[in-house]
Length: 399
Image (cartoon, helix red, strand yellow):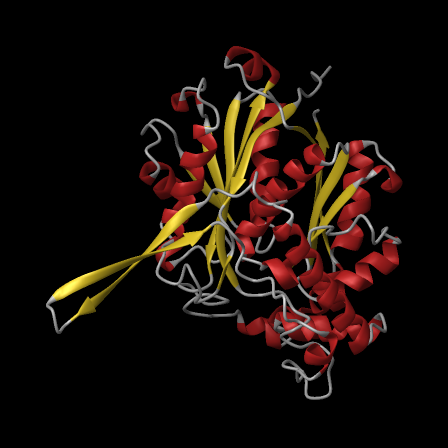
């Protein structure tokens, strides 16, 4: 008879503030952002010997350029972890960071490790969408059932808006609410516990004086939320993916830079190293959908994750549903009848940004700290995934 799974606990979760692409992190390497959050997460656990970490698993959606060469291992070494601690980079596109958390938790749940670090990092400033050299298989274009693989994400959002009859006004209203909630959360200090503040250094030559000038910028707040956004301003934006479409830059997620790290531990490690559990990893699920309507992916993954956790949907107190596009988020919420008061209470990716492979780990940090701050029990992180998938992870807060 197979042994039962043991619990995996989140004992630290932190992230950088999220920067706009070509914004405050435009000259900051993603492996440096990763190293920053790894150091910060471990600094929150002074009684844990870093040599006890079995592995560092990092999600990255475009693992090349400055975030290539197995960025998990590079980031771990840059962070000063012992050379005995290995690293592995995983790629499930927009769910890469959440997949890293799930893989790390599974190592603990099956008894193969006691301490793991899951993370995510992405620089959309340094590595473009789809990478530097796109080389799709020609067969994609020869078979109708595969053609959706080549669709741009915006076009898939247009397909969802059309099929699920999500109007332009509904999308803009949703986008406005995302910004309003994010600004209110910033004003209330809701992100303070999860963000690792740091200074972003910038250097530029002063040829007249023959010297290099250095300036410092505080990076303790997400760069994306806009106080001046109005429904009128959003309504004036033109569609960017289809001439007569409804998906605009204003009701789509922002291209962003950022990183996050989540430390997970077994019950034995919690006791041995005097760690404080923040949450229990409850379940994870992933599902496939047609690539041309990839945004609907969470509709299939969420019920699977709930079943794996043995929960009913109404038991979820907090839902972090990644806002890749307002159209797909609204469609998922409609089909599953998600309670809108529980979805993205602090705003979502339309306001806060979406650094692709880092987002799952970033939103895990938001969820874990939010559940504890609000004295809530169950929460979920979910997102759609390019080429037609959806993922969902469920956590139980420990108070």
